[in-house]
Picture 1 (cartoon, rainbow, N blue to C red):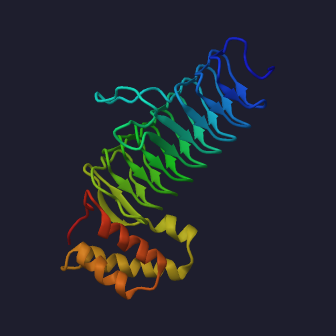
Picture 2 (cartoon, rainbow, N blue to C red):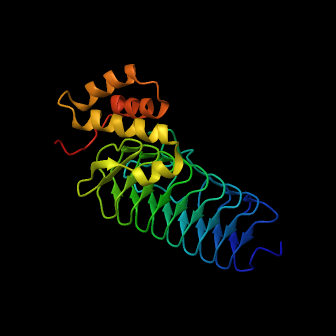
Length: 259
């Protein structure tokens, strides 16, 4: 194929679309599947059972699908699934799942992973997210959709970050961050709603409902889970219900400044 550089190393069995572009000095494993319109740039490595969706671009020297940094890992039928139209910048490092969990790391569509980002084993990532330089997701993290995480931010294993949340740069996220919220600090705590993000995306009625709900949830003396339980019964706004359900089901707790 004329769009595969002659210096690329491609193991027998790899499934590569006829219009994919494979750059110089790349490596593609025998179990990899490369979809239409994908571009693998110079020096990038695609290891293991890795599926890369349409129009995704993997930049120079990224290591995608190599085995987890987990001392318990003993191999097995594990996989990394990457959706369509993702941008994976230089020196990013993504792992597949482990047999101790679901066996898959799953990444959605239209995400931007800037240079040196790390996605560990068994993570689940939604769509339309932005991960700035050196964001590091530990194992089993769950990230929703339309999330922005600032540079040099580590996310603890098993942490869940909800839709439309924003995390400030150089934070350290050790507990769950609800949807629509802005968190920052080391350790990161919820500071406010992500007002810029939700005003760009939602109707005024939803924004106002979330502002009202935030005041009840985070400033009440009743406690955040009790407030969420009461609010979900009283509100008919779907965004408010989503926020409250997240708070009621969190396993790691929600960090916030008690005023």
